[in-house]
Image (tube, rainbow, N blue to C red; front, top):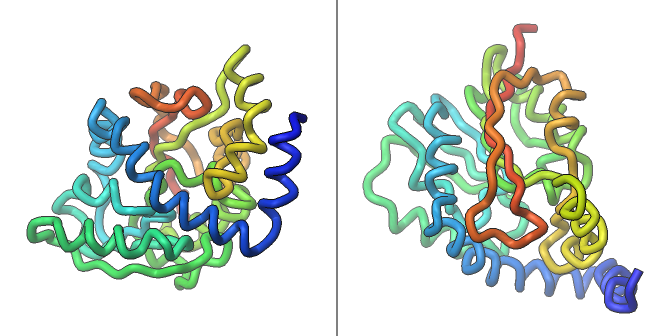
Amino acid sequence: MSNVESALEQTAVTPRVRQTLSRLFAWWYPKVMGISERAGQAEERRAQLASAEGRTLEIGVGSGLSLPHYGDLVTELVLLEPNTAFHPALLETIEGLEATPWSWRVIAGDAHQLPFDDSSFDSVTASLTFCSVADPARVLDEIHRVLRPGGRLLFHEHVRGEGIRARLQDRLAPVQVALADGCHPNRDFLAAVEASRLRIVDVVHGRMPRGLPTVVPVVRGTAVRLTG
């Protein structure tokens, strides 16, 4: 581990530094992601969210890059974002949308303990979110709990690469975790879903256009809660 990585790991655990880094992340992340959005990432979001319907929960909504891509089938949109530094930009994004068919509310909640009843959502969505949750398996359990039987998780996540890229992701993971609000670039997201009680029904593998080297490999797809 380099001296830079070691220093980041030591300082990032202090609450004050973590809070500062979270605020900075909320400032720079929409700007960096905007480059990928304009290069084609927005089309990936549109494809991901095309089948969202009914009462829908988005986990880790950030500044709201996904919001323009929800369709007429959504009736209510519950937006979960634990980093409250994102909330002003998120509300600005909502206010800038044209009239939408869905109602909305913003919640600063914890995906590991979702404050919702069992079987209370038709769809749950997550876009570039599972890299930064502390316990992906627990979050997937919570998603399974709040989805109605037959409800779907619509996901769009960057994942662990192969070969040299995987080694690069492993090497830079401590720096990225510290600077990018807990983002782990080297997680095997699909393996986590396969180990959960959700069933994957479709997956599309791709690349994030003009993405940073550690987050280029992406997957988009659907997992369903079976009956019971």
